[in-house]
Image (cartoon, rainbow, N blue to C red; front, side, top):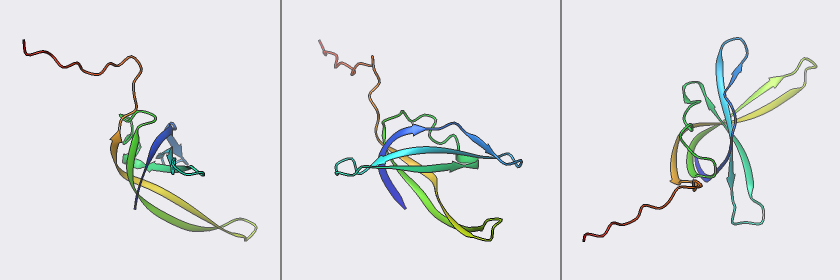
Length: 110
């Protein structure tokens, strides 16, 4: 699956449990041209946690992800379902403007 939106928040990498399993979450803003824009949370796992290190906040990106779901039975015996949006690739559609950065000027051939 894939979706395009603006990267609005990139959280720090977390170590989960005692197995040194790493994950990093981020928020992608989508549907900005509608009455109800969506802020969706995705995650990067294991060797992908640094995937967005060079992407500026507010850049428009297309991400490729897998939707995964799982069931867990809590100690009281109640079943609970979880969904995960695991990103494995991205493409930058447009970079965020950087303050103080000027557009390159065309030089005269004379």
